[in-house]
Each structure stands twice: as structure tokens, then as C-alpha cells.
Image 1 (tube, rainbow, N blue to C red):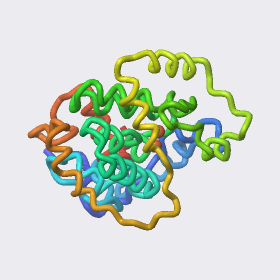
Image 2: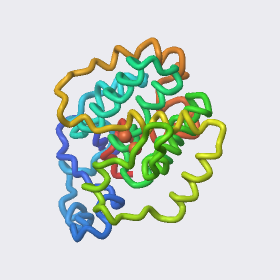
Image 3: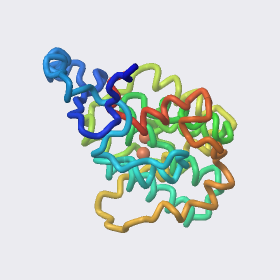
Image 4: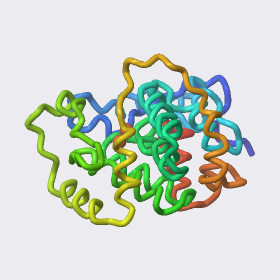
Length: 245
Ligand SMILES: [Fe+2]
Ligand SMILES: [Fe+2]
């Protein structure tokens, strides 16, 4: 009995359907029908390793995602490494440094919208709950200045959204609740180091965070994505972002 063709075997032309969530409402056509029309003995939908992307190790670690993913997402990658490095240099505790390192992780590989929540959900099985909380809440806290904590409304947000932008009600409520929470300063410190460093050309080696990750991130033996955690599928999506299903 012969096996059905596998698209992770070499020699196939592999078609990629972009994720609907990034296409919806943009006016970009849904190419699904066109792609189906191209299917044939040598042409299949993308499943498994996309040869254009660096090959991930079989048992990926957190650092592997910094090294082999964030393809085309250099701004996010640099932003995370720089935020965490500045927090570390300022002598912030581990929990703040690691939260800075991970706070926009979802942006770089998964999704932009509500990125704090996606990122927190992704990290929650592997970090202390306070760290996941800070990752989640930084999204809402970013919209609200706290002069006492030395945090101003970001000038970049005026450029991103226009100076008259008002965040939605759920964000206002989340920020309000976070402000009264015992972990507030951990979330607030993430926003303090959440600065875009577009003008800095420093190349930061993710390995400088090896020890801090070792102390604060429960790396699963089976590798991220293959450990059966509640967010393992999110790591697998990061590994195989172009899978058709
Ligand atoms: Fe963010
Ligand atoms: Fe950020």
C-alpha cells in the first residue's frame, strides 16, 4: 500500500494560504480558491517545515525561538532583547527582566491584536504567575501614564494611533484593575522598559539571558510545543506558521 504524498518531503511546490486573521477586512483577496486550483501531483499545501524558514531543533528551547524565528520581525526581536537588557542593567529583579524579555513575544510570531493576552497565555505554563500577569497587563497599562512611577503616555502611540486615540472600555477597565493589584509595579515596570529603540544599532546576543531564563522559565524536556501544555499549540504555530491546517 503506498502512502499519500507528504508535503514535508522535498520536491513539492508548497502553497501557503496566509492566515485569515491578518487578511480580514484589508481588501486583500482570499486566495484559497486559486490555491486549490493549483493543486496537483507536484503541488500541495504547506504542511510541516517551510524550507524558507530556519529549521528548528526537534526539542526547541525558548532561546531557539529567538534564534530561529521572528523572521521578518526584527523590530520585535530587537525590542524584546533591548527592553530586557536595559531592565537587567538597571538591576531589576529576575521577574521584571524575564517579563520584559517575553512581553511582546506573541507580536513577533503569532498575532498583533490583543498581543498581551496571547503572549501571557503562551507563557503561563512555564513562568511564575506574576510574570504571566505582567505580560498580560502591560498591554492595557501602556495606555495610561503613571507619573509617580515615571511612566508617560508613549509618544510613539501618538504617531501609531493619532493623538486623539481613546482605548476601548475593556482596556480602561483592565488598566484600572491592574493598578489596584498587588503585582501592579511588575506590570508597570514592563511598560517602563517597553520603549522602541529604533535608533540603536546594538546587536544583542539572546544568550546573555541564558541564566535568567534558566532560573525563571520551565523549559520542558520534550521541547516547547511538544510537551502537552495548554499553550503547546501556540509554540507549534510559531514553529510551523504556514501550515494549511
Ligand atoms: Fe506590548
Ligand atoms: Fe513592547
